[in-house]
Amino acid sequence: MENVTRSYTSYQTALDVVRSLKDAGFKDENISIVSRSSDGGTAHTDGSQNDISDDAATGATSGGILGAGLGLLTGLGMMAIPGVGPVVAAGWLASTATGAVAGAAAGGLTGGLVGALMEKGISEDESHVYAENVKRGGSIVSVSADNTLVDRAEEIMDGFNPINSSASGAEYRRDGWSKFDSSTSHNNTTIG
Image 1 (tube, rainbow, N blue to C red):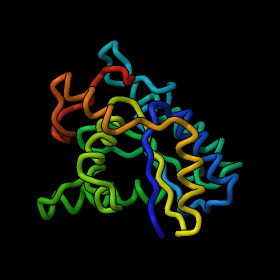
Image 2 (image 1 turned 90 degrees about the vertical axis):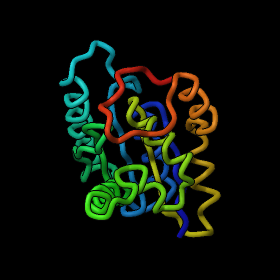
Image 3 (image 1 turned 135 degrees about the vertical axis):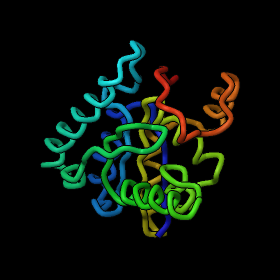
Image 4 (image 1 turned 120 degrees about the vertical axis):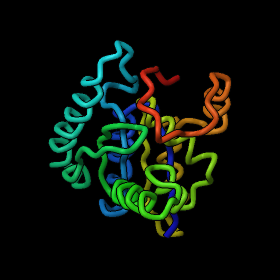
């Protein structure tokens, strides 16, 4: 099995990707989603702390409703990731991120979302960009695919215009970002 992971600027796009993967025959237990915001891809800029939590709760509720037809999303729930805050998450990536947080606390390893992504074969640089995208209101979808289905998974996921991690990382760096920092609170900016 190989992991195919992409990051998107909107929660709705991530849900559409999951739906398309399911329609193509990928199994629930092989698909994961982690999303910071369910409001169309922008983090709130009014400075309030409750609106992101409310979005995550709304996402969990609508995910549960959508999950009745999708299977995977019936397990959609809220969790907190250090430096990101509340997220809507389901699947093995969410479980791994939670375990990585515990492992990092115990052993000093890179934890949270970055550690979970790196554990699944994503480069360190790309993992930091993906985690930062989630912090800024985006989403990650990942699927474990049999070697014969990797090309199909990539075709589906790339058809939904995932972020270009190199370009996004360069844009973040122009604004003074160097890497995802789990010790800082969420960033109330929009994602491009």
